[in-house]
Structures are given as C-alpha cells and as structure tokens.
Amino acid sequence: MTQEVIIDHATARRSAETAEIMRRFNDVFQRHDPSALDGLVAEDCVIENTTPAPDGARHAGKAACIELWSAIATGPGTRFHLEETFVAGDRATISWRYCMADGNSLRGVNLMRVAAGRIVEAKGYVKG
Image (cartoon, rainbow, N blue to C red):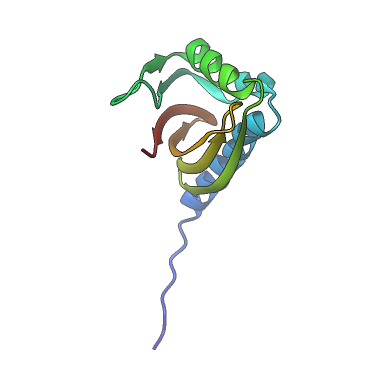
C-alpha cells in the first residue's frame, strides 16, 4: 500500500511566516516587553478579549490592540506559560496558562489570524 503526500508549497510558506510572527508575539509576553507589537499588529486588527463574560470586549484598531496587549504583557507579577502553538496557513492557535500576581492561574487559548505579515484578528477564550 502506498501513501500519497501532497505538499502545498504556498500554504507551507504561509505557515512558516505565521509561525515566525507567533514566535515574536509570544516573546512579547515571555519577556514582558511589548516593544515588538508595533511591527506585529495590523492597522485594522481586532481583538475579542476573554472578558467580560460571556462575549468579551472588542478592541478594534492597532492602537487599541497594542494598548491591551501591552498592559497584559507588563502586568506586575504575572507570567504566561505557553502550552502549545499550532499553525496552519494564516491561522494559529495558542494554548496557554496565565499566572496572576496573587498566585491563581487560568488556562485559555487564542485563535489568531495573520494577513500581509501582521496580526489582524485575535479571539481569546478561557476555561471555566
């Protein structure tokens, strides 16, 4: 029995580009340094935040998205543990655990979309 493997080079190239953007995005939170966000976020970026429940707040535009992510990245005493980043074409899923300054934590995922080398969409979800 033979197995056929079809490689779509355009999708593979997009996936590699998206993976690099997600690596740089995740570094912002690991290093608590939002300075890279300006080069990662598109002018028309939209975030659907994890709070308030049930639908989360909508943040539209580059400035609003950078403001939110900068505040999260620089939160005193907080940290993100990345569990997994999965990339397919222009989309990525980031699984994480967010550890708060008070010792509590929560787990969640971000569904991300990239276009023209910039983040254009992020939807955040948390467990519980």
